[in-house]
Amino acid sequence: MSKKLIWLSAVAICLPQTSFAYVDPGTGAYVVQALVALAGATVFYVTHPLELLRRVKRKLLNRKDEV
Image (cartoon, rainbow, N blue to C red; front, side, top):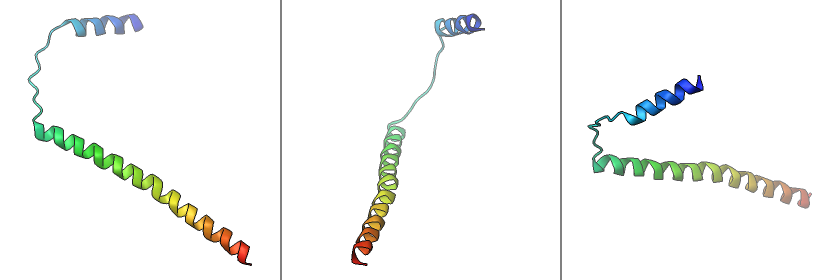
C-alpha cells in the first residue's frame, strides 16, 4: 500500500499543472485581520476566567481571615 502511495505521489509531483488562481490584496488583508482577531479573542477568553478565579480565591481567603 505504501509503495503505491509513494508512486502516485511521485507521479503527481512530476506532472506539470497550470493553476489559474488569484488572491487579491483585499483577501490577504482579510486573512490577516481574521488572524489578529482570533489571537485577541483567545487571549481574552483564556485570561478573563483565570482573573475571575483569582478574585474569587482572594475574596474567600480574606473572609476566612476575618471570621
